Image 1: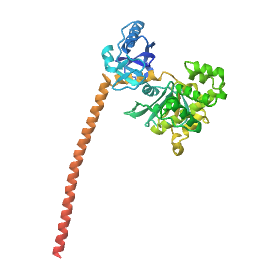
Image 2: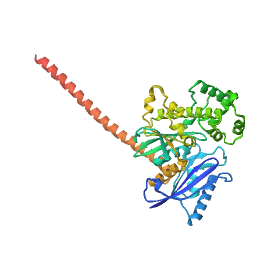
Image 3: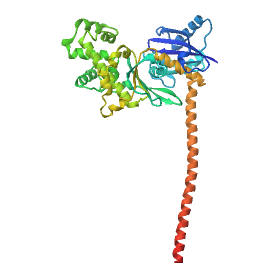
Image 4: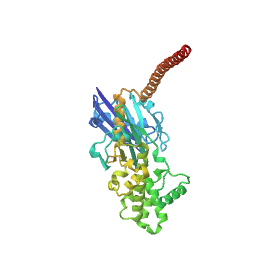
Length: 404
């Protein structure tokens, strides 16, 4: 029994695809055979199916045979609703799982949020692919959480179910930014004015763009500390955050900006830990963490201090293992795992899973209804017996009184 899985990590600008093959059941997807991978620029393609078709055609040429995937999963940038997503920066791109099944003749296609795919991806990690920054014994029947700062701030969580973990999407990166100091409060005021808003999300300060926002605030507050040469380069750079990161030891404001961001990053990771109590572990992924591993690993750093500084519930956080993910292909890995599960579980489409959930709910309700009916019958029987006992006792008492 052979199967071929088509997986993709789809952003607004680029699409990355891979094909994997497996012979029989093999739950460790790391042991599946990689067939072919390629990256594409989305520009120039009118719709997503055209990119996928191009990839499959090129794969068929390279492999010397027509490739027909058994199932497919695409990790997409954006919220997925009813297996469908729209790309805000590509007006013509609306990706729909059912339409792709028909257009590409693939039996089962499913879309997952890109950071949800990261959640599934952590289930594939080998020991050398992550770094422990807080030691604790993981509880494998407890939730797992993932937080990742990169271009934006992503969050998701995983829950154990039927002997395996399922990942769930979240928009936690858009909760309000909560200052930890007077300087942070000034930063919040600066950002409310900049964005003309009465609220500022934590993503505005914990991300690549967030680092740029913090630097912009600091250069306004401390103009005497601006390095003119560095400042000009940063303001002109297409990726200012990358340049700020490279100057942390050579530029005072860049160093301050990085310190502030990691203080706030640690605080938000701690907030996530409090929300989910992920005693199965909390994984820090995204592009920023692996490049700054020493800042995260140092127990005296602003990151770890803010992570643990949760008042009277701080001891709870000491029981949670914390890991930094060192690899950058979590999205593809997670999509691979989902595509494999889709095939292994015998789903012809994601709709089957939805219907199964509905059926399970109906069976559960039916079972509960039957149990309730039986319980009700026993209750009435017990009530009748109790009433009979009371009547008998009363008659016996009256009879004794009459005899006396």
